[in-house]
Image (cartoon, rainbow, N blue to C red; front, side, top):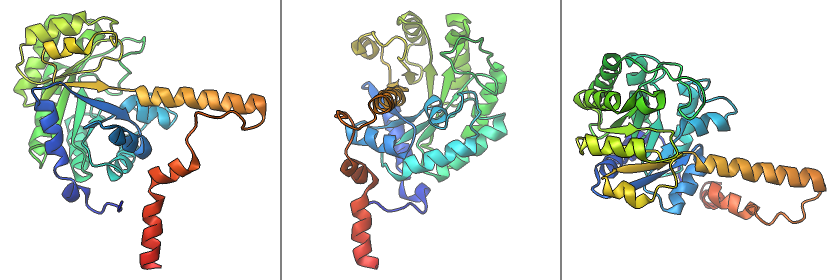
Length: 298
């Protein structure tokens, strides 16, 4: 029976260990995007072993842009609902850490308290811009970002809490050598894995990095733009974790647009065959659990 969490850090202390095992797995693993409690539960029910709490998706479902317009405390509230309804680990998209080392390490502490498995920080300046957008990307100073990672690793209480460093060298157009230099600096700072990002429609940048990186540390990828690359290629090059980063958000947007348009134009509800039943909504909300508790306590 579903119960409200009182102390998630105690009840779900093993989520960090679960995420650590996913990241360090010798087999390619996958996590799926979610952006609220409902989508997180749907991801878990689909069979995924972990959840990507996407910054793009969480900000979009709040109706704001993905450039830190939503504060970290607002996103933390979203994450509380996501953790409350699931038992699989959540990796938060922590953007740049919402400031300097002190802001980032405070976020780490608050995530630990809420039973979140880990956080991914990207090496851009605050406020960030979405990596897949058209605008120029400004990267953080390597030493500054390295010290941010060190501060977060020093500050975490649970040694299994995962901190992933997201390298944006390819996004900024700075090339392979810069990506390798940055990721090596982050590895020396104690990060648990590196996420190498690219917005190219082919796998060439990521492939070149993986071959040069040579398994120094687990590598996470986000194949949003190079989605036509066969998954087997990721396995061949020893990718540890692939993130399906925003697809539940995009699927829900299209479904809502089509449903709203159809109802507006037809002025009736006939032919809405692709929507969930109210009964299914109640099931996802665990209405039955409340009914059982009513019998016990009322």
